[in-house]
Every structure is written in C-alpha cells, then in structure tokens.
Image (tube, rainbow, N blue to C red; front, side, top):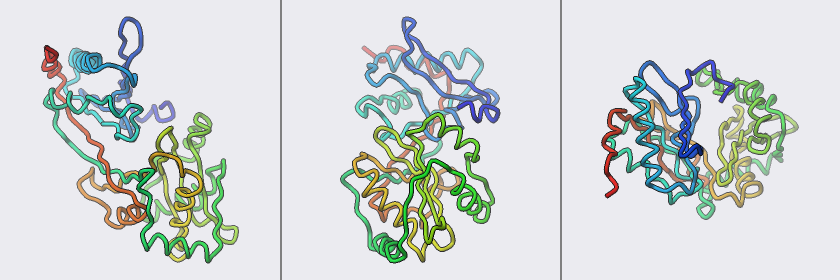
Length: 290
C-alpha cells in the first residue's frame, strides 16, 4: 500500500495471540473514525483461514476495544466479497456485525462468472463474429504504456473527466511487486491497439481492474472478442471471473448498459457490504459463547 501512502493516514492494526500474528486490519483514519482501507477495493479483517470462531470473535472484540480506547468513535468495515475468501466456510463477520448493532451503509454488486456458468448471449456472440471478421488479434504484454496512453486515459478523460485510479507509474510499480498477478491484454486491429483489459489475478479469481476500448469498439466487436478469448483460452480453469461493479453514486444506482454487457458473458451478481460500527459496542461481544 506504500505507493499511495501520502493520500491516507494509516491506521492499520496487527492482532496477536501468544506473540503469534493471527489477524490484521488494513485501515486508515479520518478524524475520529477508522475505515477499512479506502485505498483498497477489497478490504476487511484478514485472518488465518483455519482460525476458529472463538478466536475470530475475540479478535473482533479486542480490535473494537482498542479503537475505542484510542479515541475512535466509529469503525467502517468493508466486507471481502465471498469469492476472495480462501475458506468460504469460515466467515463469521456478518454475525459479528449483527451482534455489534452495525449499520449497513452501502451495498455494491459485483458481476461474476462462475466456472460452470459461462454462457454468451446473442449480442456477445455477434461481437465475437465482428472481431473475427476484422481479424482482431489479442496480445498479452508486460508494458502498460500503450493501453494507458492510447486508450484508458483518453477514454476516462473524455467520458468522465477523471484519471485512472492508478497512474501509469503506480501500475508499473505494482506490476514489479506482483509480476504474475497483474497482467495486461490488448486487442489490435491492423496493428493498432483498439482496446484492452488489465487483470488482477488471484488463486481463485480473475478480476478485470480496467476495461476500455476506442470509439470503434462496437463496430469491431473488440471488447467482446477480447473477453471471450480470455474466458475460453486464458482463464478457462479459473473458478471465478469478475467484471467488478457497475454501481454509481455510492451503490445507489446501477449502470444498466454496463450491467447488461457483463451479464452477456454469463455474469451474475454477488454483493459486497459496508458497515458502520460504534466502537463502544465491543462490550456486546462479552459472554456470547455459553
């Protein structure tokens, strides 16, 4: 997280049991409140995958108690989407939010394709045919420069007036730290880049961090062609393929067209919850095990 350390006031925690590290919380502070790190898409409390429920309850309690004792009134917990859990049978955090009277502040929907739910709609198949007709070519590259400078930055600036969350320098730094986990795939027409996607890959999930195409993407079918290639030829054995969210306005609205496009590959929605917890409610976790 050091690459954006100047943007956030760190408040991360390490939790030990008998001098052994068993949990950590990536976090930052704003005034008298602590947040699951706002510079991370997926946060929350991280703990050993085989940690027992009794220990997780105690971890949650001492974390809130520590924050309360150090003057922090509220803690904002960002849940980790279920597909990223190493052990999906060990997640008592929603129960602990219930017990500490957490307020649900936001819910995002993530479009995810499961290994056995991949299917392409008529529209996506037509896009694939247009890509084949125009002899499009997909290439994996170790450089992000071409995609960032020719496609991503101009698109985000013209459509939304914003820059990518990661600068070119930052994505190159991350790539140097995670050489096998961050990958760039570009699609070309007559040797000219017409689109691309930046992939963040974990053990179980292929996540599209950035997707962008030029003004001819619909005519060429470039993004349909690219992502069907990724699903059928590159990540065909990955349990989950995630397109991320289509939410707007802090989860209040959904980009209908973007959601339609993602679901054309067989994606369906899972949720990610954001909770606000009064740190003084750590006392509500006393004596729940009887």
